[in-house]
Length: 116
Image (cartoon, rainbow, N blue to C red):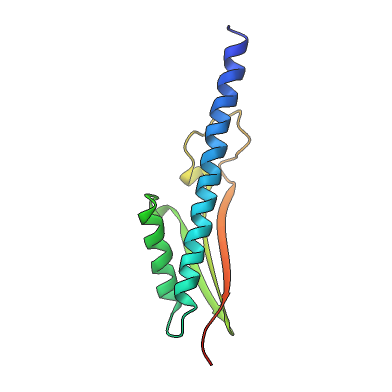
């Protein structure tokens, strides 16, 4: 039992941490998509895109203050980026799990703006 339990617990905690990583990655990508969708409308601005992405993170029960949200418009495209480091938003921080605290978790969406 003493030999098997650390391996078993490492696998279980690793699955939990990687599962949360993919959950977080999905929510960041969805927040970026929602922000770009609002910002790509005819009268949408970069500020509207950032506000919508922040509201999406709040609705998903993720503290929006932990994330860096940026929106840039160049020509007829809008790019919304939502990102954080794993050290800010991770849950377990186990030393034997390979997700380092400086690992960047991000979601990026590029959409074409509406209009003439």
